[in-house]
Length: 74
Image 1: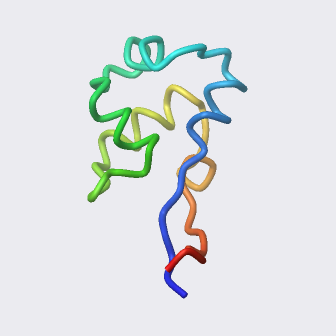
Image 2: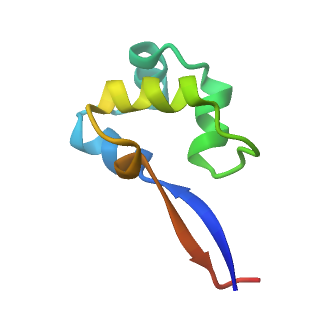
């Protein structure tokens, strides 16, 4: 069993009344391309600046944004 890094961006967007990736891009200053990859779990590396910006937008801690999960598909 392997582990995979997951995120709660969609949940945090809903809790913060952010209706679209475009709105999140505007509030965070993070490019849409980076946000799309992060949300879809396609990111190969975490950029600390990106994580900090998202935590600032959502007023949350890193553990609220990302977490490690079991990947039962492998």
